[in-house]
Length: 568
Ligand SMILES: O=C([O-])CC(=O)C(=O)O
Ligand SMILES: [Mg+2]
Image (cartoon, rainbow, N blue to C red):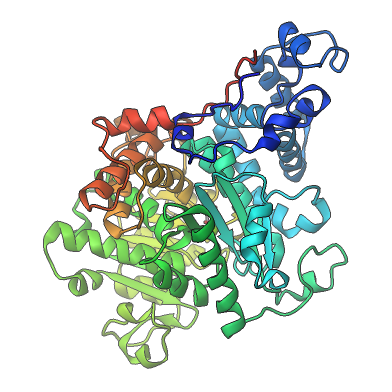
């Protein structure tokens, strides 16, 4: 057999230690069928079966990978319950990785909602009950003092990207503790499927410091530490040890993506580590980049420049303030105005009402830049009527908050109101696609964080876009990895955003879409990766030299291929 197997060009960047001997020793005979990285199931050819001690272990038929994909898709479609589809996909990932990715890549529109939002949310809620095998590393308070050793227990050594959560704010579902593991697992499968990063280079991590979720603490199937969340120094020290161990074990170029931390930690962690590590917060930065792209694309449909628009957010946490800041940065850049002035076009409402200067003293630090001069307003509907936004963005994590009143008020102010209901999963969406189109009489430009089906309204079909950070983080990460970039900077987020907006075609606009369909996502990711890498080279933060001439081609050549290889 040809080992080490090369999954993609990124393998050439593997350090001298190369592939683990473990892979070499088990990959034949029955164990080969049990090795998810190399298993091909019925697609092993006669010759391969002869050469690798597989005769008799498989029924006589040899089928192609394409036929395997077809068969699996047929089986998946038989399941009525989304969670059953999810579990079937996880089983496939654990038994035949290439087939899992080929299926996911070739049927991305259909299967994204299965392995990602909304179903992954339900999977996390029930993770203890459906748990079968470890899909990532669990670093709990018990591992304190030995995190480096724990990292070395993971079978893969050449890790390029880690997605880590502490489970405190899983989507809009709140504290799911250790069961948040579904999120890093799901995000990383998109890194490979959508962004082409080798699966073996991806490491999902859950930091378990307990949970404040009483239901889970009392659930006999809960898999995490049965205690209230550690906070303060105990929390900070565990995370700090993790961050240090990761850098020590994997080097400076390891990308660490923070995912679904609570507001009170997310901003601080990002700030604390952004000058010592390659860190990226998907909820703050990834969401910001994807929403800016959608808004910029929407300008083609509604007219005006970014600076001509007025933005109102419901929700002033990671997504809300992250998006607001990136929009302000872009306005400031395009119009050469001061950032403070650009921010004045943007208003945020939190659970206490409009964020205004009289509230400044009591605001969390990440909200302070948005405390503009204005009299207090308590309700969203009154804020809409007063501020008269052209763009309404929901990032509250609370479903059904864009009520009929609110949406109708947007339609009364705007010919084409831009309404983005970003909270996940579907149950937490601020409104449904159907509500947005019906209440605006088909005039809304609508996108949501979790997918909605097309809506028919008065004989017209409206296709809602999905404003989800899944458009950005896989290509963004690929761009960082392929260029050996050592720090993330805002200009890279702006570059990613521009790259995504540039991928929306006239045909998409004609359908009212402000995002391209996910079917072309690998091409989109390659373009994003190229723009991000180009910016990193420009800023002197890319270490992989010389800079390739054609970065799009380079990105494509780096991408993991899910097609089987021939084993000698
Ligand atoms: O996971 C998603 O679908 C988007 C996201 O980061 C979140 O909602 O936290
Ligand atoms: Mg998230």
